[in-house]
Image (cartoon, rainbow, N blue to C red; front, side, top):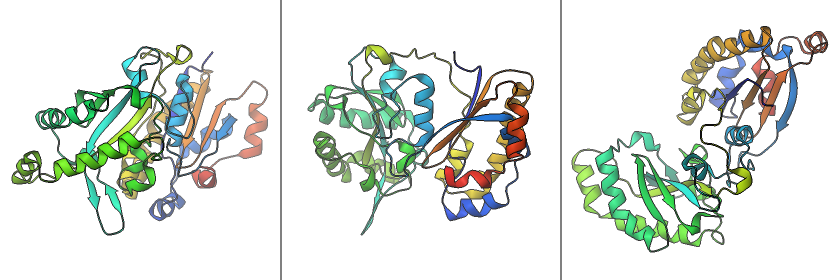
Length: 315
């Protein structure tokens, strides 16, 4: 039976120099008191080149979805409660900043893409996808739903991996994604001089010249998890600040999480509620759960207070 309370914290640490600088002096009193009262419950050791970041793998395991590092978790199919075998994915319109030696992904949230513009762009691109057996459906300005057989076994890097980075390192291998690679090239050429971007330029808005596919795959009968399955408490403020590389904001977000969700989890644990805590970095994740009776004093004596600084290299 799953624990009643699970706090899952994405990007609790990063190897970025700015993060390491603020992390060294960061004090999180509630976390430091809580960790010695919990029992280690395993780790997920990965790489910062995995298509699926640790927090997405941890969430997938919590839900009983495929949780590998290779970008095959069928997030779209799960959220849409697609029929077993029906392949889905999310498509995010975006801007690639093309330089001499890199192609950077701008944060889609900064594109000021409103519903009317997004629907107009979808109407422009939908026929190109349809030629390859992929149907696009509007969901929200920076996320469309795609359905079609080419998405069934498509490895996709998470948006959290690619924002602000060179997209070339995160494209799926061409042998597994020839259709996607060709569509990317066709869409770039189509939008380069399209009136859609001319009109956005007149309003002082960034051009949209690409798209990103993520969360692709299909459910089978064994992974048909209900869409209303209980989710962990998963604050995203650390992730958002880290993607912006705003490390003072990241440190402030950690202090707020420590005083809020971490303090509440500690109170639940003290009251006897079974709890879990998962800390995720860019490579790996660590998990703790309520200690069995009789172990608490021994664990506390072994570990004492645990600053996050001591755990950074394991995340």
